[in-house]
Figure (spheres, rainbow, N blue to C red):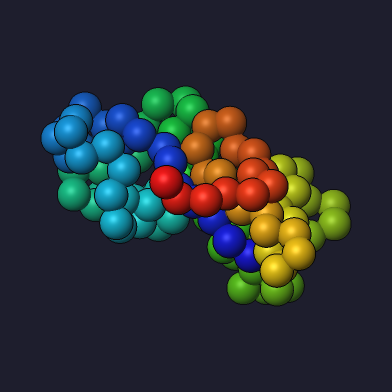
Length: 103
């Protein structure tokens, strides 16, 4: 499984605007904790949805080896392979990219 975290505008008290998304900026979403100015009360509705989905993906993966097991209400997260290079785009709305390449 592979993901890219692209959620920007983390909070009013978050990092400077010019940083946009940076290494580690997903941690405040994964753990739903205060992280560099991020606290849940600053999350917008969209950011809250992304955070809760990320938490559920990580828990499901730890329990089952699949971030979006059958019966889950999450957006399906297909497995990455050499032939099918699926990447889950973790920003609102969450969706799957079929061939993500960093430019």
